[in-house]
Amino acid sequence: MKFFVDTADIADIKEMADTGLLDGVTTNPSLIAKSGRDFMEVTKEICDLVDGPVSAEVVALDHETMMKEAETLRKIADNVCIKVPLTIDGLKTCKKLTADGTQVNVTLCFSANQALLAAKAGATFVSPFVGRHDDNGFDGMELIADIRRIYDNYDFGTEILVASIRNPVHVLQSARIGADVATMPPAVIKGLFKHVLTDKGIEGFVADWEKTGQTIPTS
Ligand code: G3P
Image (cartoon, rainbow, N blue to C red; front, side, top):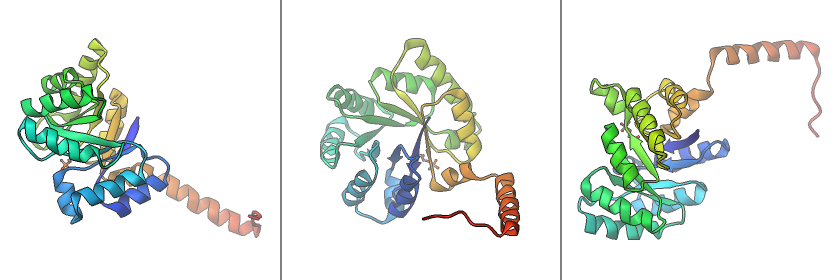
């Protein structure tokens, strides 16, 4: 399972990239606004920090302007992945861009039928929003399982990129279902490392080791 970080904060991206476990980055207009940075500039910086795909979202709602925006965005770096909304215009844009070999992430997916359309449009990734789904009284994980089943039925190559992840349990459930990618806020990635028994175990080993008065030579 690939791990993407869902942020446009450079310090957070650096910290995650340093773990060696980061496979990509997703951004959206809200995250760019939160960063307070220039869109083109911050996207370029992110692309230089990670080798994997970096999703940068178009903001136009019509196909022609989406294509023009995508043209600008894909010139930023080879690892830019164009993010388009799950609309007719978005999917038209997806079809054209992927036919040209450009990576496309179809975002704002809230139903299995929408995911089916994204796959038919040749999307590299589809982004179902599980947190927002749960918030509105639906079962986000049921959606992921449905999409997995449908994609497997037809051998679609589109990767299921679980988005709007709110906690480590969302990651665990996505992995059990066999989702391809989880994009997470930095706090959720950090949460995956944590276990109270790990902390307690380290505390015990450190205390016992100190009693031995020994050190492990480091040079
Ligand atoms: O990048 C899209 C998605 O992950 C947004 O998450 O928390 O705003 O629903 P959220």
